[in-house]
Image (cartoon, rainbow, N blue to C red; front, side, top):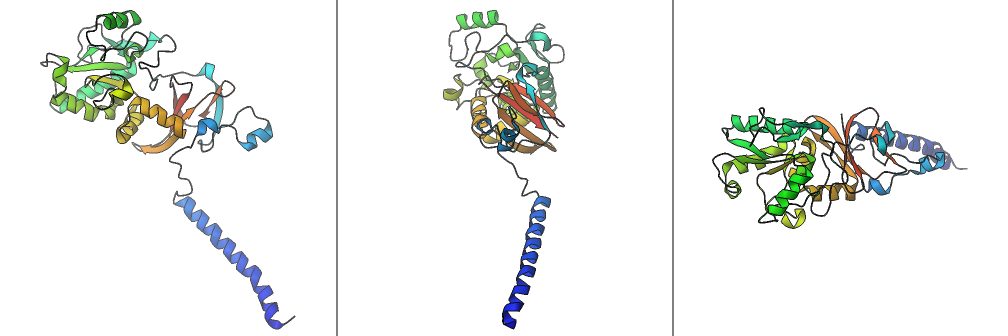
Length: 309
């Protein structure tokens, strides 16, 4: 063997070691800068629930790829369903009677048509905060014209409606969830007057800050099945209202987006949020064990887990 070949054989292992060290250093740099951890969208999680490792262990279910660490399965029967993202429209009826235990009267904290108007307590608090912000902005004439309706009230309203483009049949109205409110402005003597009012513009722009969405926008009637209602607001939660506003989604589009992608990760208000759509598998869904979370049925056969830290 020549002297030159001996040198090359001696040098090759050193080159490989240096290359390996450089690669590892680059990988750690990526981790430190967050690039290797980027997880903006979870692709089709609902169709990729079981990992190969879980199948090898014989587990009946496993968390979706990309789900935050420390997840555990829980039975669907034990879920506390907030219903904040439950889709109710002309095509999708309420799947079960609404639990009225969290309904509260809105008066006197929020001006209302009368003292009997009720809402889900979370929606009431959001609207009270919205109304207080409106007052600081010089808008002092807002009130709730309609909140929770039971099935008999919705049925009567539907039967008496002159134009059913604005009214949904009983069992198909968000008002029956207690999460929707019709917010009008005193001094405007008909609903049509709200369309061009400064109050309606202010509400549409500011409601998402408080977890509320304009449920039936002017350009989405073909999707929502309801004519433009500048007074109808629905509570969905702040991070969801924020994302829907950014993307221009109505609730139907947002649920479809979550079903298609499986969910997403975002940073909002100083926290990291994971929003995941899951269909139950073997009667179970996955939730993070060491993070705060909420669960809402979507009324589409799946559940939306919203976790944050």
